[in-house]
Length: 356
Image (cartoon, rainbow, N blue to C red; front, side):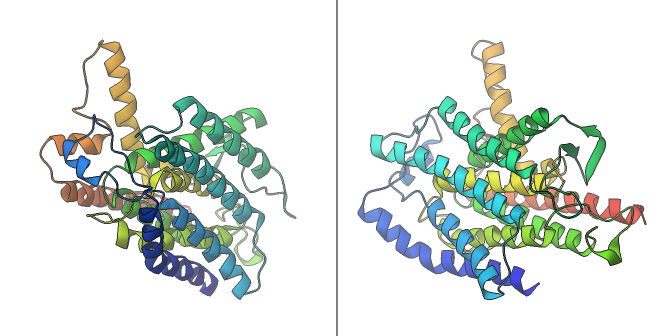
């Protein structure tokens, strides 16, 4: 447990005290945010706020994770390394998107096709690798079965379809997190909660792990390296919690796509490797809501030839258009996330209790 707490403490310390220096660095070089013209007019005052704050979130997570292993002299697991690979890889995609916006002085970065292709490349590599490296029990970091609270054997997919399924989850959650990052502090607060939930979930799986002789039984969790996934999850949670100090309204810095895409990808990696893919849609309900609002808006607009289903998408902008203040929207989305996390964790624990 100490190595888990150490990882989170290191990451939080770096973002809490280091973000100040990143803000100065980005401000001196004029690396500010460009605001889209079709968004809420109140957001135009945010133009020029330093962006790409995701750089320090990624840096803090990497140092927190590997620093904890170094302090306690324990090698990282293959699951942790794969999660880190996906996290950094998708962060690189986000960085390219942010840099395109800054270098071309516009609110649009990479086009959707290029972004999806790059996400598919890193997601596909992660998916293929995660189905390799079996341990002494033959368990790989991920499985080819669709999972809810654990793997569902009757929904085991062929390897190719399993890879496609995992790439879909990664793309869905990385873009869902990206859409959630539209108001000061909203994504940082929401993501802090969902990653904290996965810390608890992975710690519980570690205590009831099938790889431990004392817990072998029909209801143990047949996952790979759950304790190391907890170290990874708390590193991100700690980094986000420290970053929120600077990102809360009025934000002194935005995380940009560098942070938001990476956060969603890391969430997907944890869902896949902890065998809770469908449960992640409950825990990450805010990400799902934001994505669905955009998909339905675009679909309805095309179907009705110009009519809108929502006043504005993503849905948090609809709430602003209804007259809610930005802080009110953010806090209420935090509350919604807290309820979703509680519901997800309740389902997870209830399934275990009911099986005893």
